[in-house]
Image 1 (cartoon, one colour):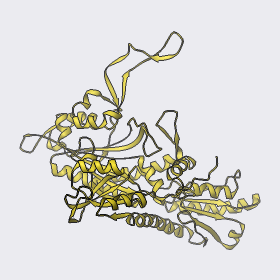
Image 2 (cartoon, rainbow, N blue to C red):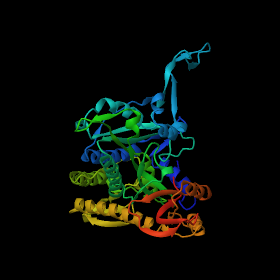
Image 3 (cartoon, one colour):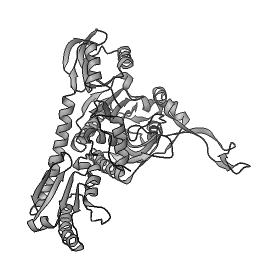
Image 4 (cartoon, rainbow, N blue to C red):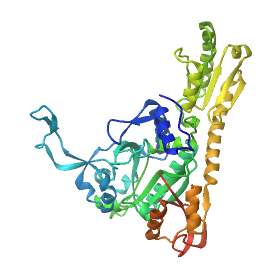
Length: 490
């Protein structure tokens, strides 16, 4: 397969799809709308998962696991929730197959389930049915549970990582004694997601809340983090929901307070998914391939030997093995690629495509001069560096790459937030510049829907710290007190 990619300026969507496949992150499967995550892609997801899991546990959460199948009747208990997911549900109706008279495998029509089972699109219903048994007293609260799982939402138009019928995620589900505690939990987890995006993914995000029409089904408030991709489209990178007492009332989850009175608990849920992989690719990568932030790169440094004879390779390998050990002692993941089946030029192109942050090349002359050649993937620069103290230099360089990637993405994001006051300006920015459009909105879902129908732009969020100012809605001209952020989005 040719490793050359379509340029981003020619066809951003095609560039993305080619890059995900050619960099060995994922591929389409034999099941329509589902993907196979390949080892290199899964290694990145594992690093994300490990860091998020650490952050969840540091904030007091524990992991558990709940069933993949949810009785259909559970969905009927919370009306807005079922309405939000009804069109995306996969339904199990039978539990057995058989051979027909021609030897073909068919569904055994006599093995019909008494009650259909929904393949988990999200777990609020099965979890809240369980919590009824776990919560009796204020002493059982707060209950802070996270689940790592797969979910199914029957999407017809799919794209690798960004939108697939089955995807991997984590979903937190918490129960609290008071409304205030639950709101604080939802806000705290929004902060955890923002910290992860910025410090590990090197992606700047805007924290805010969703409008009523964009909220999670069954939530009273949805807190979100919004990122901006290189093509000027926004991507929702994580959400945290304040669920009020909706699910507690639907599933009769009560607790005895300190006075012995029965009260319904207050709830939150929150989650991020393998969609973050798409965000990572689209924020930093270039026409040569992936660009990975060192904090999430499966291989942070690759060492490529340049040699002509077995003797040269042996001498280089001895030095490379020493460097490898020194780097590993500093917690740096390193690969020494001493394969004899591929030439150095091929290896350089391969690791450039796969986004390895630092490439270290070493040949016979480098051995003589006690130097190595270091190539940075993010800015494609090379430099000769002394072998003495090399591990510390590399550690500092990786830290600098992490900072530089964030600053580059931040600079792009900040230069693509445009304030407008008229609808003509609004449409012009969306059409010709892209990014976030900061505009006044009259607060009605009717105006929101009309803008969406005319421009395909949605309100991505009402920023957490809005600047209050008098203005007029960009569409209706009605009075408004603050600006919101619109954008076209994935």
